[in-house]
Picture 1: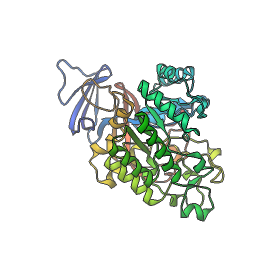
Picture 2: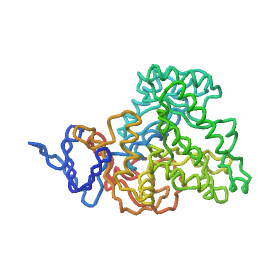
Picture 3: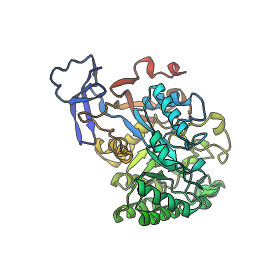
Picture 4: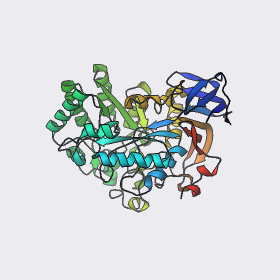
Length: 433
């Protein structure tokens, strides 16, 4: 289909474009910006007057709950489209873990059948994610894995991680690591500090993050392997990444969107909706993450979407499953961060479009001629109240329940095809049951 999106404010962070213009799409790709190509006859016109037209968001961490929960992927894909997310990186901590090519192929096939966002699976770095033996990562790469991740913490044996990074460097494979030293994190459920002490909650000290980062960077210095650090949570961790980048180490980093806005004080009286992993920390830590994202120390922000069954949240704080649904709140929360940081919209959207695409090495997240027409059209002034009834995701658990947010996706296109339209039935929850 040939279509044109007219009169919208087209924002393309990759080319630093921000102006009112028409966007022309043909054969699933961007055909032109501003002036129609010769002989172009649109089969559909979309009026985006008063709206922002931008590359679809690329989320570096969103759990689809498949394999594991049958049928979950289709629902969470629809949640992604409702949030303007056209690309999803799926971590390997599924049930079972993504450590076999057959599981990866099955997941990719199901994602195609769901006709949702593009799915980028991460392969398990070690067999069963146990941290003992390197998984068959070359075979997993051939099956479609874009990178390889150890999810909860670093492997117990530094020698194993050293050998993994040497191997990764030899074959130029990207490695993603959570900076957590689990012997220091222990059974902690909250960030160390006055709040955890007052509530009597087992705490995770920042030391668990910084010791892990020191280990990663020392091994990088020896091997030269590329590493993406996932979900920074502490001020000390942000500073270590800043120093590593100044040194020239091949490292990138992201942070979860909740950590841009919330602190451990928001736990209140043991509210399990604020049980997250990594845990919420102090205001000083939050401010460091906000500043690190603004100055480029932290490259990208992700939703860290982890829908949790209602029964698993209706438990005491320490026993509740960590995680929150976040695909549909990613856009407004990023816009809120950008407004507070007083950054131009083009810089704000870069953190969830072409910068994540660059980390993945994928030719997406941009609106240049020939690029895949993955597009979100959103209303930057739309006010809406977060509630379970407003969310498409099966996981209604969110620390922002009851909050009024500003900014919402109105249409989402993947490969030039309109896959979500808030004004039609395809945007309603009832149609997705």
